[in-house]
Length: 400
Ligand code: FAD
Ligand code: NAD
Image (tube, rainbow, N blue to C red; front, top):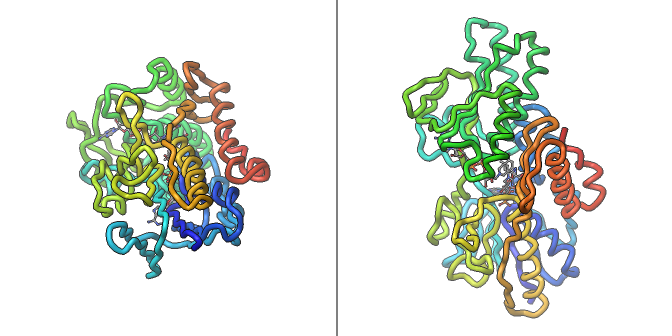
């Protein structure tokens, strides 16, 4: 009987798995279904750009139609609302459809972690999806327009970014680049604008190379970004934020980049989770399940020192590639002959806006254009892996 392979999520992990299977398997060798809540894939690693308004959101969207061969993959645009791996082995969609499987791949990505901080869910913006970043871009423009009408409110031009991890740092770099254009458009004195990046830990980019962190802070400060380090945000209101030291900062815009957790559906699987992520076994399986694989931001994989790797696109893609090989072998041989997954950390590169970036590849540290070119190469490599040269030509010039 043709095995049924069900893949949930068409982000970095799920899409890579699906496209590799599409390439490896012949017609009718397997019955592959891919479910995603949108009919497009988006380049999450560039979401900070449309959020700031420096790149059109359409630039980072790729229609799944362009990538998927409908004769080999059955794509369903729907939201997964329940996953039952314990009893019925069934996935339920928001359209009421129920899907069964022989092999299930869960790759539903992450959600924003607010750590229960009062008011964040209600009053802060987040950088998570095409829709959420369009809201940020429009709100920023609205605050400039509002300030023009009510110049007695300097807080309208104060932009707070909570969390100086990679998302926060990349976003403030991009936002600082957008400000001069907005000031010109709305005839506002640039000196009136404040971008404040607030970080709870004793350093921005905690755990990253200190020399590169210093470089990043220097670049961003020169672009006009203010930093408050070692200062957790305690609450968020319609008016701004309150810090743990009691200081209140009024702001018309708060963007929360303070961390991520897995998907809430993961917490309903009936398996032990850590912030909605599952410690998978060495073959990327949910513990205790032969045929349920969990990858990307939904999974936790440990390094040799027993520390979890951070959730990144890089690991999600490698897991997808690995899993597709395992599934192909299962389809061909009729039995699971699994090989352990080993993550190959190729490096970390982060943009700091126009013309600036930092990166560490092996022991080599990079800054400025060298790091930016490295980021472009990484992006193009990914685009090539999912859509070949045509996609690189169409979408491959994202960086400024
Ligand atoms: P995702 O890529 O998030 O995909 C999940 C998919 O599931 C999405 O298509 C989503 O729409 C879909 N989905 C979710 N819920 C449902 C549901 N209920 N039903 C149906 N579909 C659903 N990592 C790097 O390695 N390098 C970087 O430079 C980098 N830059 C980043 C920059 C930003 C601004 C952000 C926010 C993240 C960045 N990351 C980076 C992290 C990286 O984007 C994630 O680790 C990666 O996207 C995880 O891949 P994934 O497949 O697990 O999930
Ligand atoms: P993160 O967890 O890496 O960073 C969140 C930051 O917010 C941390 O520095 C944390 O100390 C801070 N924070 C938490 N609570 C706070 C509070 N109350 N007040 C102020 N600060 C607070 O989250 P992220 O930056 O969204 O990244 C998520 C994942 O995506 C990570 O694995 C990251 O490596 C990856 N990512 C990678 C890149 C890249 O490689 N260029 C870019 C973006 C994201």
